Length: 113
Length: 113
DNA sequence: CGGGATCCGTCTTGATACTG
DNA sequence: CAGTATCAAGACGGATCCCG
Image (cartoon, rainbow over the protein chains, first blue to last red):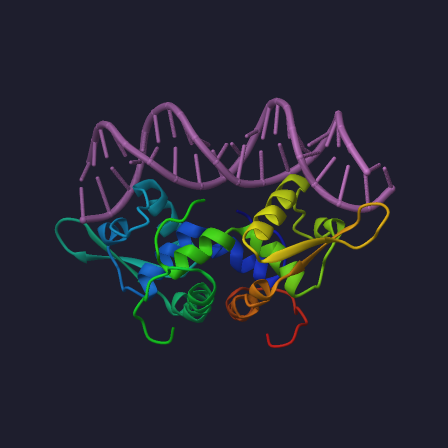
């Protein structure tokens, strides 16, 4: 989606404000996933086309960096940039809210939740 | 979207993780908008059908409450519940990130940004 | 007239199957 | 392993309709 206004909330949401993107970011930031297959394994069952799309968007937005970590066979890894890691507080607040306001969410073992 | 897992992030996103919902929440929490028309006036130009849908979802999720504020003529107002107001920290973190990491976002005068 | 609901064409997203 | 191609499903925008 194109930029819709100059509001910092709207602009941020235009980059990351959809469910699949945030699931990918969770996997990157909280579970340190880096490979295509690892993202596919998450319980939400993202499909390959959506995953490809979201990884591209995140890369274009400068939130992750793609690199080949093996010379023969293409083995890609996706790592959050500084800018991407700066989203952790946002994710943390979402976790806090979710745990307090939604029943039956799991324990989710991670630092400052 | 139905609940996809027991992850607190995913569950939260299933409720509020789309751009229009969060724009409406911004208007509710930061700009104290309460009336249908006020939401329509925002620069993002939400359409009436989408607005109707999001207000319903937020109401069903228990994040806002609808009430009639005038006896004759139906004049509705939408107010955040306790649970809805608890999302402020999430929005605040989004604002912080947006202002730091996206060019040309506006000043957005609100408390703890 | 305020406050929506509904319909419809279009644009976007997603699930699967298949490939370099 | 890391995607693309294809096609189906769903979300959106705008107009119009409806009801008190």
